[in-house]
Image 1 (cartoon, rainbow, N blue to C red):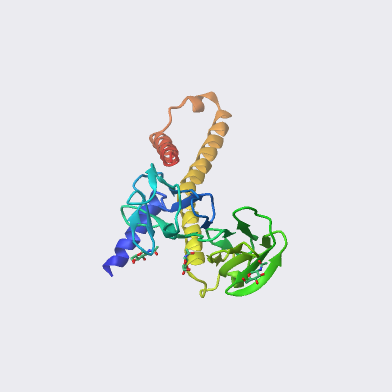
Image 2 (cartoon, rainbow, N blue to C red; image 1 turned 90 degrees about the horizontal axis):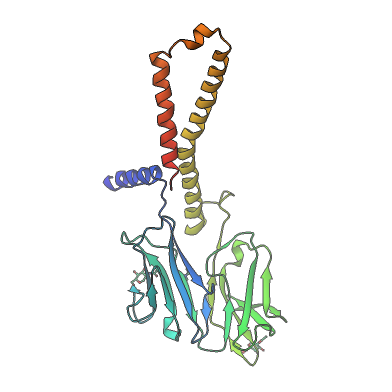
Length: 280
Ligand SMILES: *[C@@H]1O[C@H](CO)[C@@H](O)[C@H](O)[C@H]1NC(C)=O
Ligand SMILES: *[C@@H]1O[C@H](CO)[C@@H](O)[C@H](O)[C@H]1NC(C)=O
Ligand SMILES: *[C@@H]1O[C@H](CO)[C@@H](O)[C@H](O)[C@H]1NC(C)=O
């Protein structure tokens, strides 16, 4: 009961300040499988540019360990792992002081000489999906692609594309190149489009992303409504004055009444409020 009201208050507060506090985990190169001795840079990107995010990971040997704690070289809000080894495989995420976490990503270091290049973040329903099977020496060799353990396609160029991804394409993918070997498996998730109404049976990511969209919409309405109202008021008061100018001189010269002056002050206040609100 109390928790609900606190959540409600926090929601209102963040709505008022227009902050969603979303953090994004970026990585370069943007892929989820790596060869041994590859290098990767991960960075936490906060919408509000506030500091205080740490990159953490779970591996088979240690959980919740942070960049610099025996792995990675931290520098600002990014972290570089220069010579990846098999034990760098794991789940990586950004975490704030308030323990808010970003989306987590799986990184896998291949023990062999073949990797599958697949999207790190969930793919949007209807979008294209391209998978590449790459050997250490050559990226354009004939490859076979497997989903959930069964062969789906053999591609002479080593790349396969699904033009319009659907929910049923979600699964565990891997590939192999004859005489070079097999890649590790990577999970590819597909999320529903936030614009189309997704059924309540859909998994967590689409629901939270459409919630986020509604939130941003509300947020923009809250910010822009006063702007439009005050613009409307200004235009109508301007027109009002323009017609006053056509009246006889004696009337134009009359000092503004108390009520008019009060209204002028109000407009100024609204305009100041709007301009300050836009300084983010
Ligand atoms: C990391 O490991 C901890 C401890 O086992 C677990 O509670 C947490 O959910 C894991 N985090 C992720 C993102 O998998
Ligand atoms: C990471 O990999 C595990 C095991 O394959 C899987 O259950 C999980 O859904 C993956 N997480 C992401 C974010 O892909
Ligand atoms: C994939 O691996 C299987 C078994 O190891 C092998 O028979 C097949 O030729 C490979 N296919 C390709 C296209 O590399």
